[in-house]
Image 1 (cartoon, one colour):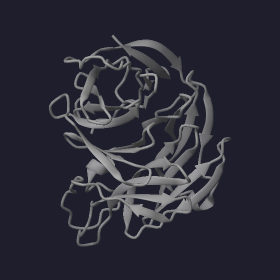
Image 2 (tube, one colour):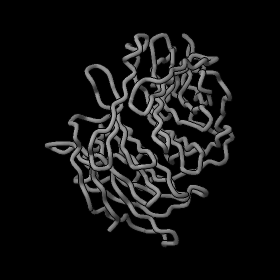
Image 3 (cartoon, helix red, strand yellow):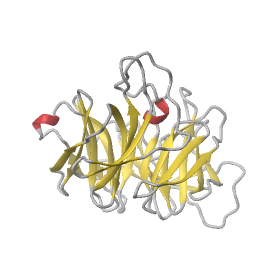
Image 4 (cartoon, one colour):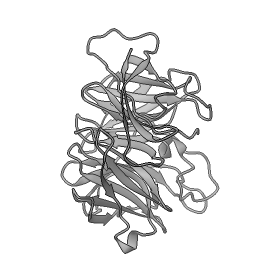
Length: 331
């Protein structure tokens, strides 16, 4: 899959508008220089105040940095103060509306931890996830009541049995399994001759996304065509499945955002340079019906991050001189 430069775009979708037949262009309305240089690792995430969070390389490790909407760095979040976690890898992270941060960590011997942080960026708690099977976890979403949803796939055994089988579950703050969730017609893994601790046997899960919606539900997207988005309640019930057709042939979904009863999915063709093939498709979160398509330009970037209640995205793009927060509106 192409390596994508981090950016964020602001887009406006007005209720009652007729469905657009051709992509709407996005014009830059505002930019802010980031106070910290470096290359971000996707995905980016935002809280309810528009603060932007992303993973930055720090030596051989990753740390989450928080930036205000004007680009000023507010906090950094690192788990390395815990000696046992010094060899961990930061798989994913989740941010709540009020700015609570959860990190999903992977340790050797197939151990997974979730760590939380205080408001000043200090490590507050940790919990090892007690799974019944050997799994590799790729995504985390924070839920109410000190619980969280995770998604990944089975590692399988030395013969390849169950390798790549999707795994979805809810855990409590102590790491106890609350409920395992089966998603109907979930993506089938590739065939394998042995165990796969890295999750490469089921790339649709590994490169998919899981985010929390402002309606309280979890939206789980598999990187498949058409894009398959499962809507899961806080209790773990599967409410519905949305199938979103790719706007460009051979393109795959690479980012997912949810806000105001709408789902925004960015599609791009793997390994094709440039952004001519990259389209953001916005659909109804209840029915999956298309509302509009949005095209982007090289000046904006390629990777969607935050979809806000006011009808916009906020993007972070690596320019030639310094990373910048970029906001845009549909023309």
